[in-house]
Length: 337
Image 1 (cartoon, rainbow, N blue to C red):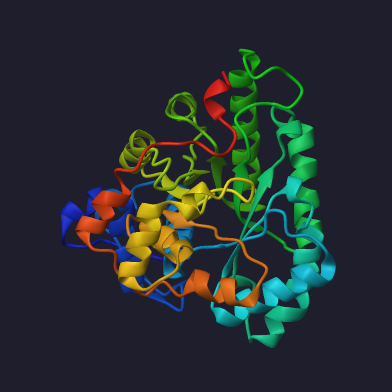
Image 2: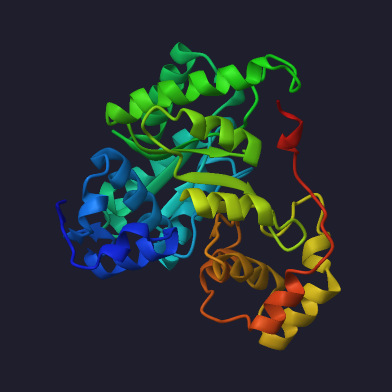
């Protein structure tokens, strides 16, 4: 990869989406051929620039990552990874606490050759368990363990799964210091090349402000949070956009326990108007705003539907969807100091 000066100096202030457009114009099959940026950007820390480009392009070039939360069993994992690669997913999201990294690694070992793919053709996200927050040795062990289980030499994106540490109360002021310690260690592992990009999950604006006060030279590239028409997180998204942090949504369809979002009459009416399923509508609602998605599915037809999002929600329909009453379905990080 090399960076050349570009005559258009205004590109120095590109948003995340414009960075994506730049990448799209300079990438071949998702890989860097050459990148032309203004001189002011060229003077940035190369590692920070690389990680931003790496994440943004990988998350935008394909319509979302394939989620694996609560998907278990070697045979099941193999089948869903097989189908996800077949239909075009090239990004896979997992976590230490999902306890399926080894099965994903074994599946990829067999399936990448099947689809003529190499390691660099896929993007793997995994996450640090809350039990290791603030423990440098535990963090290193966790990263090395994930690498071994997944059969990788590097992780594309590594997230702090939760802003609190499992061993102390959420209200404890220690959480703030432990988060800082965790980030410092992840930057060290990033600089060693074990992790290409680092980010966070379930961080509030306050958590992000604390991190941005001292991020040890590497800003978070992603904040993975609950986000859907029933819980839009508009202030958080605005803040992250301003800081160049890509928002990735989980629970885009609600949760398996609570299906109120999928059954919402407004969602179903608009889905009917466009002639798509409520699930596809909800995924597109996020994508159309530049929010990443990580849909999970086990059935083939659902995996196929989750990537078949080539339709548009018109402005009036988007406004209606973005005016629904707010209901939070997942855990609440606002309780973490």
